[in-house]
Image (cartoon, rainbow, N blue to C red; front, side, top):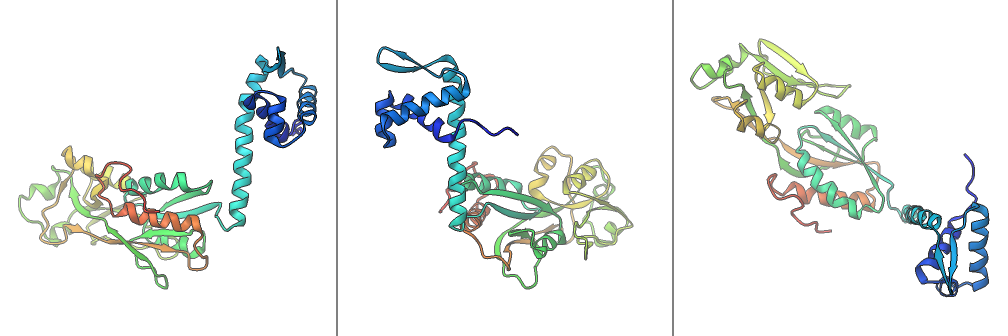
Amino acid sequence: MKAPRVTLDQWRTLQAVVDHGGFAQAAEALHRSQSSVSYTVARMQEQLGVPLLRIDGRKAVLTEAGEVLLRRSRQLVKQASQLEDLAHQMEQGWEAEVRLVVDAAYPTARLVRALSAFMPQSRGCRVRLREEVLSGVEEVLREGTADLAITALNITGHLGSELSPVEFIAVAHPDHPLHRLGRTINFQDLETQMQVVTRDSGRLQPRDAGWLGAEQRWTVGSLATSATFVSSGLGFAWLPRHLIERELRDGLLKPLPLEQGGTRNPLFMLYSNQDKPLGPATQILVELIRTFDAAPLDAPFGAPQSPV
């Protein structure tokens, strides 16, 4: 890649000449001599081979090419300043990236609100979001490839902070044989039908969480696939209410009238990497996750206001 012939300082100098209305004014704003400013711009035009300014009376005016290049240069200078700011913030302990792993059953809407509020406070810190199922979250955290983790499982040796429970409902298509029984359903009824189970993404000790020993079991890779199967009449499953609101409303899914256990409300927890102290950006994100977790899922986007 060919090295640029024009420096950021030269672009800043040209911007100052235009923004302040002339060489003398730019020299005063930049705390430099007028001859230094004039030489910098003249040298810049020579290097580019394109006239950037023309003299109109006593005032320097941009040429057509100068207008185009100056407009592009403003973004370039802004990005360079942001890069320098980020380097300074990293020197002060501000993270370049926060790695967040989340169980796929946790409501995405809450994460979107938290991350939207985090963005204007991030100072360039990126968020790397990863979705796993059940023990997959714990494995990622223990491997050290996540700074924060959200899961309903108890992670031994880690102190987590409580988030909200997520409601799971036992559902099937309205025409499913279980609904056609026309009565309260018991455990024996479920055993004779096919259950759709979402695969645990963990590799070390995957769990058959939620499987009741049904006569048939189909294991799928995501909750969304499970919802699609069950909505099509293929078996029954426990699914997060927030994920199937539309299907319930449209009559594609109907809660099963179970004697007991028709709903489950696992409490989700927020964990952090024990081997890495929380940096300032991560701490801000933690508080935002807690704040927006407490808000109703149907609350207007952007509410509540962040306390940080």
